[in-house]
Image (cartoon, rainbow, N blue to C red; front, side, top):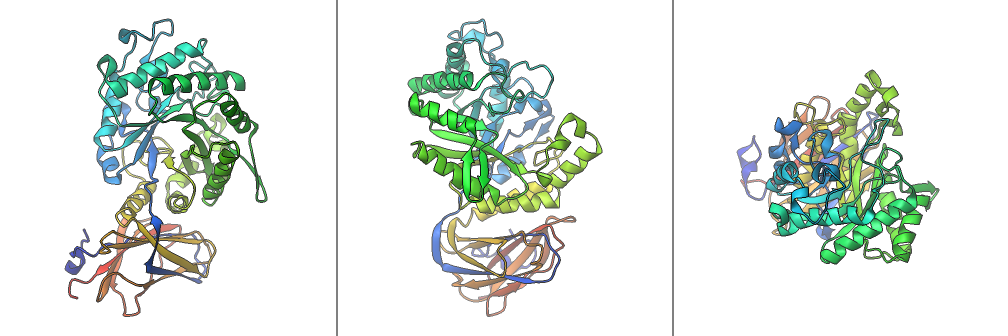
Length: 481
C-alpha cells in the first residue's frame, strides 16, 4: 500500500519502475511504454541458493523469504551456515552401511531445514552431493568408491522426501541435481572427468528408473566456455559431459550452470549460447538453469582466496552488496527475462558474504532489489517498452490481467545517462495518473523520494538520484477521477 496520498490507495493504483543508474554526466534517456501492446509474461526468476535458517536457527530469515515469494531454493553449501544438513555425508554417515535400511540414514536436521523452506512457499532444487571444500585436505568431494551404492543412497533420500519413506514428509522437490561444479578442482571434485560422468550416469538412471516423473539433471558447471567475438566455444568439460550423456542415453531433464561477472549483459548472452549448445547436442527439451549467479567486482576472484583476506575482501564484499551490487543485481534480473533460462538462483539468499543479508540477518541493498522485482510480478503481462537515447538502458513493462494495475521497470547502466524520463501511451485507466518514487542508493533502502501527479501528456521526469542506484516508481489512477 502507498503510504502518503490517500488517493493512491485506490485498487487500480500500482505500477513499478526500477531504474539502475551509474553516471552523473547529464544526458537524457527516454523510456516509451505502450500498454496496448502485450508481449509474453514476466517470469519469476528471483530464485536463491540456501534457505532462511542460519546459524543453527539463531538467524531465521523466513519473513523476508516469504515477502520475496522465492520461487525456487537451491540446496547447495547449506553446511556453511547450517551444519549437518543436506550433504550426503550428513545424512548417510557411514558409506559401509546398507542404503536399503532406513536406520542407516539421519534425516532429522535436513528435515527441519527443508521444512522452513516449504513453510515460506518455495520449491526445492535438491543438490545431491557435497558442499565446496577450500581446506587443504578434501574430505567429501572425492569420487565415491562405489557409484552404484552412492546412487542407491540418492534414491533413498528421494524416497524419504517424495514417498515418506523412513519417516519422511513429502516436500515440494521440483528438481534433483547431481553434484555441483565437478569441473572446479579440487575444491568440488578430486577425480577425473570419466569418474564423474560415470557417477552422473548411474545416479541419473537410478533416479529416473525409480521416479520416472522426477526432473533429474546437473551438473552445475562452474565454467561454460568463452566468446571470441560472437562465436562461443564451450569448455572441454561441457562438451565431454554432453557427449557422454548423449552417447550413453543418460537422462538430462535440465542442465545447470553458473556465472559470476561484472557485466549483467553477459548473463543473457551466455544463456543464449548455452541454449544453442544444448540444442546442437540434441538436448532440445532439456531445461537450462542458471542456478548460481552474482556480481563479481572487476571480474576478480583474488579477494576470496586466502591471500585476499582482510581489508581487500571486506571492500570486495562491500562493493558486491552495496549500491554498485544492487545496480548490477537489478539489471541482471531484468535482462534474464528475455534469456532462454528456465530457472535462476542467486547465490545466496542467506547471511554469508555473497548473501542478501549480513551476518546479523539485516537486509543488504541487494535484498531491496529483489523486493522491487517481486512487485513487478504483480503485473505479469509484458507490454512494449522502447528506450531512446542510450544503448545501456533496458526497460520492462507489464499490466495485470484485469488491466487495472501496470508496471514499468528500467535498468540504467549508462554512466552518461543521468536524466531519465518515462513516457506512457495507452494507459489502461481513465483520468489522472499519480506516482510515487522510491530508491535504493547509498542512503535509502527502497525509501520514498517523491510523489505527485503526472501531466496530461503522461510524462514523468524522474528525480535525479546519485548513482549507482535503483529507482522504483509506482503509478496508478487517481481516486478522484
